[in-house]
Image 1 (cartoon, rainbow, N blue to C red):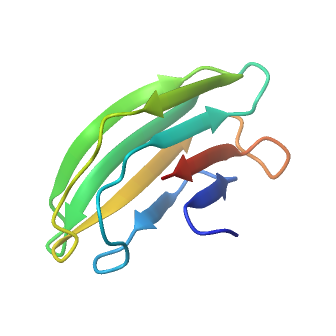
Image 2 (image 1 turned 90 degrees about the horizontal axis):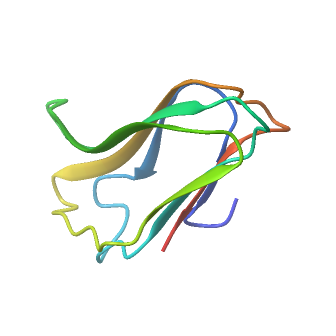
Length: 102
């Protein structure tokens, strides 16, 4: 999979930018629910080494809908990772949650 592009096919926590894994600010995040009708529940957050979470957004993304975060997200990548948890919806290999980070 290309860097900054993810297809999430099951309820799980996915590391989008690991500690020390990505340099520079994130300018754009697109989260697309490709299912026809079922909403996906997502939590996008920063997490430190001790497991403390700092939430950016917790929401449901309706079917056939894209959530775009266009404000620059800048954080100290030496102590924080960017993660996404999916916990419901119609996720599968044929209807993934597609994530693009620029």
